[in-house]
Image (tube, rainbow, N blue to C red):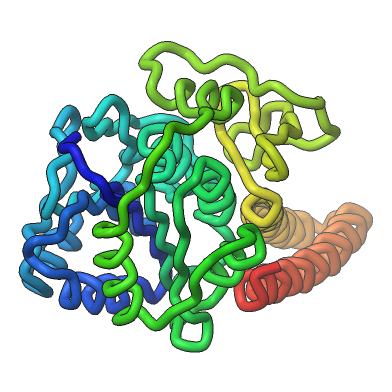
Length: 337
């Protein structure tokens, strides 16, 4: 990475409602910015993303989709592509198809953790509009490694979950409108930082799990009575400094909010599967009743009708439960719980 006296490694995270915030940020950053900007927006895994082109047209800085091995150069913006985590290592971009974090790939926290290890006090972390808490743990790690953190003013954010979570996780954070965040980045890039920093070895081990092409080692920590919503494997509770997170043996990682949201999605999937099977059973029993009646088997017909009535009651109950799970998930997202 280019030599710099200021904070010159900028990592930016956004999710729901974040595209417009990112466009505003790009419009306000100058062409001679003495920093590299790396952007993660939660994207669907399939298909191409038009985000780099949208942001490239928004302001004077050139914006491109990140490429593995590309050097970190000042005055450039790199956007994480779909289905790849964006990390930094030894002055270069790394793209990896590692395990999902909080159900996302790309995700904010892996990028922020790697940037904290790479840049230490030269790192700036920015969190824009989004739901839940991806990026909050990374902001805390950036701060502990001497970097600086800013979040979009929750009152301005379309969705304030991510900014509020980052505010709660950090001790010295700027909460600003997006246009003012751009000025903050410029000032920080021109503010000299000196001295080294101590890398958190546990964070380093976690980032290494993403960078390794081979299989992932089990997460260190205490085995819980929980299972991973992604793969069903056992979940361990671990801590890096004051931050607690959860990980399974194959490498899926979760914050508390992310794990709760992932569990809600897993329950919803299970309920939809149960609803499907009950509906199929109800249709089958209906056919069996018709056949029994057509053959004059009244006793079998009554028994089958009773089974069908019990199945229909169970189906109604499952649909009620599914509706409650949907409402609970909506509350989780809207309140950032």
